[in-house]
Image (cartoon, rainbow, N blue to C red):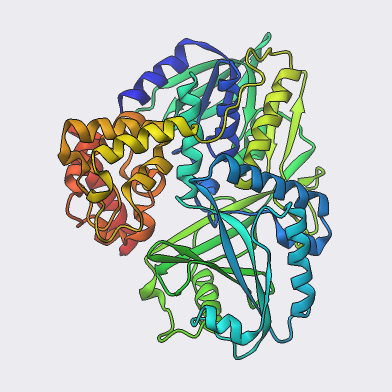
Length: 538
């Protein structure tokens, strides 16, 4: 935790070009872009990095095919370009996946007509993915026996993209990039209000781990608080053109229930899209799409019933899924940008497009809406807006995103081969260690190899049934600001999504993991987590 303590001290000592509030995807790409382009950047979040919306998505990077129904062709065109750009920039992380879509008899459009939409989508996607295929009910059943086709009129396959690791890990890698380029970043630091003193913003903040008060000075403030953007703007007396509405999304994760590693897509009983998403040896099911007033939300019995009823109706499973089958849950709100002070809009027609409002006089930006697919555009747009406020970008054309080049990857693969790294892959692992480590850590995977070369025991799987090496825990302790055990289990990794919490606390290696991550605080941090698990279980 030394890195975090150092950064918190720096927040109170220096003056920054830009202070970013919120470390979800919008804040993360803003920090990565501005730091690489040469500005002095600070970023804080009152919780963990990607702690809310950005860690509760469907893990899909898609071009927005559903927006075709509302004739939002420019948005779909933009999102398809963004998806393709992400896939090119992150070939190990953002990968093509086939969507196997089944339409029931009585659906509002015939299957052939919707198939024409997938062809349009493919064209708008510049033929970057595999072509769509029209499928009859028998062909669908042959591809995936789990699908109930008794009431199916037909369907089709088309392609989009997904995040191979979890969404929070993807977000954190932008944060890590920002830190590599000099940004001072800290989680669990709450902004309590900002005021202007001459040309300088003074933001009063609190270190949530110890109550220490901080004063952070900056020339520009970027409000990237996700669902809390409006609340912080009100506290700072900022009037904006856009506001947020909130859509609650819930997913349930169960053991793998499908044969193929494709996204099964349906239209649920309420007419909205419903997915069965592969997640290694698990399956993610959802999502709900319910308007809520409060961004602080949770999974209800009604949410669980809706998802389980729909999956049991749409799939022909040997045994219907019940709550006993649910390993973990994901719940968050989608902040939807709407224009106008009344904050009202056609709910069904709302999309996830982002908007950035600028108060040029105060040098204050507010980011509304957005999604993972469009994140690179957000970073570039923020950079240009900050420049328009009078801040020079010393390295304006610097590329701040994407995997390291093939030369660096080749060096990693060569060294991994010398260590015979892939031979150390556990039998239950879903992929080879070389593939996994490069995707998770990019150039920093070389540090993992250094640890293994120094001490071969660092290549041992520390947590049973969780794909993490001892060396990765040591790296996380040094470089990833793990403040609480959940930070590691839920967001730096996806362990908490694929293992039941009650199993995690009894997993072999959990004590050693805490000792690596927290040192002298290991037992205290483990006890805190166990208490949380027991409270939820009661």
